[in-house]
Structure formats: structure tokens, C-alpha cells
Length: 60
Image 1 (cartoon, rainbow, N blue to C red):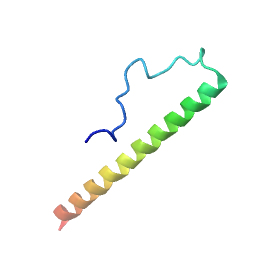
Image 2 (cartoon, rainbow, N blue to C red):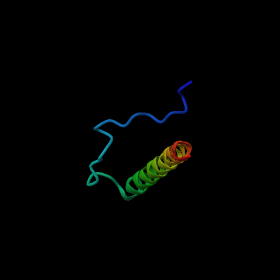
Image 3 (tube, rainbow, N blue to C red):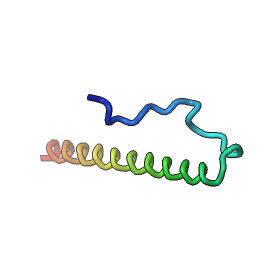
């Protein structure tokens, strides 16, 4: 049921020590961060839409 949820990040996962990472690992890490940012922005949009819908009901 919850298999589609991303794994929780731990303190060890973030922030990573960049000095020990190769260029390829750094690029991969950037892609992971971009995906997380996108996921977060999508959640903000959903919450904002829900908030706006609720606000419009109470303005009437």
C-alpha cells in the first residue's frame, strides 16, 4: 500500500559529504536533489490549491 512512497531520508543521507564523491556521483546526487525539489514543489501546489478552495468557500 505504501510501496510508492519514497524512503525517508536519514541524517546520514543528507547532507552528504561531497569531498569523497566522484563527478558522476555528484551529478547523480544533483539529479536526486532536483527530483526532491520537484516533488516538494508539487506538494506545495496541491496544498495551495486546497487552501485556496477552502478560502473561497469561506469568503462567500
